[in-house]
Length: 455
Ligand code: ARG
Image (cartoon, rainbow, N blue to C red):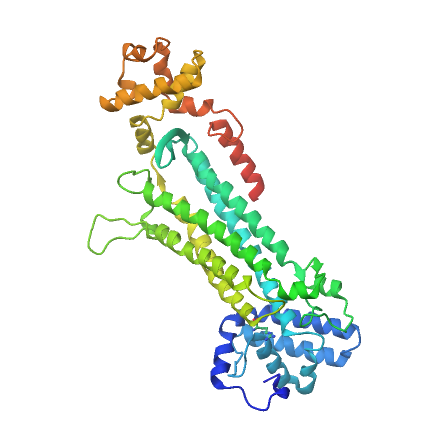
């Protein structure tokens, strides 16, 4: 053990196993080595490590990195975590000099640095993939720009909308998620080395320069704050949670809109699965798994928030579990981002079925209200009259277009022949002229703006 000086006995084997985190934190090897390379450079600059020692440590660290990259690094039972494993190997390679690496550093600021670098890298990757996802939604919107569909509230038909407007709603959600990830990146972008175990270090290293080498734009202002800080992980897990919720809702839409009852969407054969017993089935399993797995992300956020909330200042071993949640969430994010763009793009969006559903419903009710308001009927009154028309239609199993003008006049004398011209989804949609509405003009603007942003 690297710290066994104070101890008179060897560590109990069960304790070794229980405290060990190597299975998870080995993913940090690259960051740990990069951090160490910069740390020795800092120590060399202030004369704590001489040039010869610097070269030895550098060369050995590079060799260890190669061993990892070639899958040749051999872990020993005693390697409690990645930091100790690398230092142990370094000392095996270059002897006493290797023991100098940890001068002016604690595993507390070391692991802090590694995890920050890991999170920053993941976020950069996720952002790129999010762009691809958003772009695929924009492409779908553009390709199916003119399809009309019922828009829902309470899962009840509400107003006609363009399908493209619906799908771009998700592009906006994912764009917001991208901002959440950017935010998490800002939280992670604080260089912790120099904070030591918690109090700082007597070695006056150039922290700003070191931070710069590793792509950090800020250094920590308070060693106790940074050592105890895992807010950046919470920010990352929150960004992931928000994204997962949006993915899950999108998945739910695809599941329900692909059902026989709706029949609006048909997912591609390559992205659906069959049933072992019912030959007619075409199941949207991937969407169900997205809906299902998103709870693991939400659960991780919840679990990690709970893990942190009772911890006294500053570092506590409980925090070691941060990597468990990071890893679990990162894996699922990767899966979602990998599968979604193509699954969405290959889906057939059935214009005729969506249009049909719209004509059969009472989605033109709001348009009737607007028609009456234009004839100077107060809104509340117009709402009531239209409600009466709807009730009459339901009771008599009719649609708005089935009624004659005389029938309409029974509800209000202001109805004229032009009432029939409003039962036109495209017309109603294009009358929604305000910024951000469902009109075709608005869609075109949205597409243009989104394209500028994701490129
Ligand atoms: N494996 C530990 C972690 O991930 C490294 C830091 C250990 N520090 C300590 N003081 N025991 O949190």
